[in-house]
Length: 458
Image (cartoon, rainbow, N blue to C red):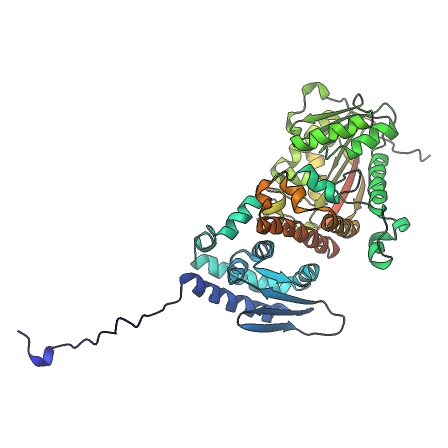
């Protein structure tokens, strides 16, 4: 029996009193919030940002009349976790599912790019420290939520023809238009206001410009990688007298393209193939006078660039042949064969890889073993922001929940539909800011055979 001096007395807390400890997710959200706000404090040198959440409002940068002023209203603490662990991808996800509201989405993109140096250095350093100490935490806290399930479903949607009809021009060209003084130039919609038919005019101009660079003539055979909905093939056959073979991997695109081609009475002149470009038949060797691919090269992947141009060389005639390849691209300083997952590669074009102009030219030279010569290099980046603005306006005016839910019954749920629509709104703002700020470019390259004479010069 122990002595009284060795006894220990325990005071037990009454059962009515409970100890409330913060959840792991709230601890992480608090850490993320403090870390992100610290980054913003160090990084915002251009423009003005205000951020409101349940704890108040914080201000960054210096406000002046006419400056780029952006306000974020944080509606869920998950916003901070997403931004900490996934950067701009996390921001896009939070916007799509309504965890943050933005008064000016394009302004937010501009603010990010205008302060990119500071954001990259501080946020990258922060992310590396966090990721080295917290492994797999994203899926732990966000992977099984209803919101995350909604994002996972959106990434797998095979967008319907009705969606694209809602915002594309009547030619259904899902690529950069070319604007001229006739439409007020690349800022005509901002300076002069909107006019019906401007997008159609600019897209037709782009088609004719491409076909002119391809030097097509009546009776020429034209090979196209990336049919879209047949817009370029129809003009090539109807107005230039070409015979066209065009490739797509989309069943829905093929069906609608063939309907449009039949309506024009061009079914004998245009063949739409449901075919991977790597599987073109052997009897196409040296069969084509021209090759065209408009904004499909982004989906080739850097490890296949050489093989792509090897097939272009295979299909084109040995002389008096032209190839025109257009692609959204990175400036040389930003290009790498490995491109980390971002909003575009997660939710719009999985596994895409933007080339640089130099990478395309190098691949053409290597893949074709010197049998393709660069004739012309163009950068259409300045024409893309207006194209995207036009698409955004048309989508807002024409897309309805009833229309899209016919193809995707899951979008009958209002929250799912709103997230889907915000995805496209985000795309148009995200890409528009990237092209306008030079973060992304849009190159069109024209190649000819060695010793070809594009035009008489002596």
